[in-house]
Length: 467
Ligand SMILES: Cc1cc2nc3c(=O)[nH]c(=O)nc-3n(C[C@H](O)[C@H](O)[C@H](O)COP(=O)(O)OP(=O)(O)OC[C@H]3O[C@@H](n4cnc5c(N)ncnc54)[C@H](O)[C@@H]3O)c2cc1C
Image 1 (tube, helix red, strand yellow):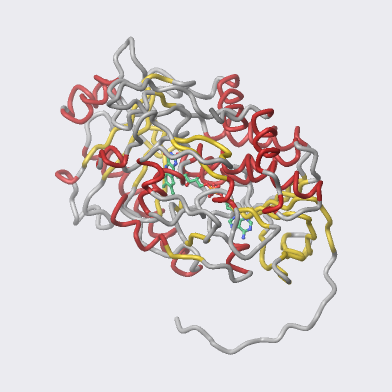
Image 2 (tube, helix red, strand yellow):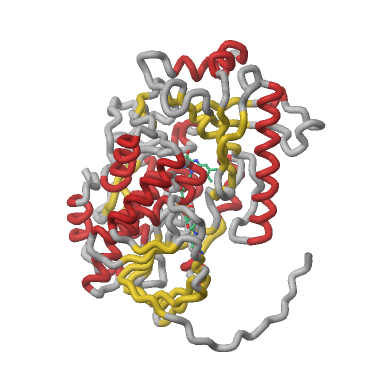
């Protein structure tokens, strides 16, 4: 289809105004936490989200809570919990519901972080909703942020659209937690297309995660040998019951029967005795199309392709793999997940060297360690003590004074992004952005005028671990 390059000039119109202290765009992994943090700090907060449920890729796709602990190091550092605050509170609340595995030990973990946590999607949606309601955040779901008015280095208003029509939100501070940096893009801040690099590290910038139930894991382990065996060994009776399993299906794929897949790599985050019996809770099909997810046509086509592909994968498993005979797809992500799109330039851009060297920062707002790519490239692991710091400056987009970024839209070093984009790190950024925005709104100052010592004091008071 050809793009029509002509323009329609819209008549000017009067748009109703909603006033608030802090506007958070995107109720995803980072934005959900940012909104709760800002509201608990005393700000009036409006959170807008285009999907019908909060939680973003954490609820709708990722679901792996990677990770709350530091890495074990060859120098002998023992893994310890380095993430507290709202990210940890969310895990604790999920544990209370009974719909999570809790923190489970994993033996010989190739990420060098011997604890895993996984939760049920529906419980996560409910707990996230409860946290937002309790904090008094005003939430508008099924609401799209469609435009931004920007003058003199400051956002004056953002336009939102929903069933009520179009509204202008005028806030003192704005948080861009859209994953794609939609606010930053609309006001023309510098962005780089990191999605183009993603094939090199993990099979592409997108993925549609789903789950299957009705699996006879005992039979799968007994009859599929090697790969399944390895997983079950990791999960012995005295060890954890949560593991990740990559089952290379290449040797069984039949291109004539399953044309959309010439190879399947499936990561099962699965729980034998824990979360749901007989369920592969998290099947991560990493071979999704390489697309710019901010291009509506490409994203739509990729979404539909993946809907078809996951059903072919499920059919292939059912037909070809012992133990899967009675299996079925019991959930699929609401939308095609995005690992990376465009990255916004911020005052500080994290590098892989910062991670490898286990660097710390004066204006640190959190600690982190998990690295998705390090098991394949040992040089990417952190040196002793097995974790690194996250500076406040990584949240400040160059060129805007009342905007904070949080989530996967920062960090354009691809290797470093393979660490900072993970869910728990996004939540840490969210908490810091939320508290900072609330403090700036209260003091009526720009984000760079906030004394980071005050921010750190407030973060520590909120349970964030900074030492
Ligand atoms: C397939 C896949 C598997 C993954 N597996 C793992 C894993 O096992 N462990 C792990 O730790 N990480 C994993 N990740 C990475 C991790 O899930 C994401 O990087 C992280 O959740 C991103 O958080 P975020 O807050 O930046 O974005 P999101 O959680 O995606 O939130 C962005 C939110 O903004 C909303 N939004 C976007 N634009 C607008 C707009 N204009 N108006 C209103 N709302 C808008 C979106 O709907 C969304 O809810 C995975 C990612 C993918 C794609």
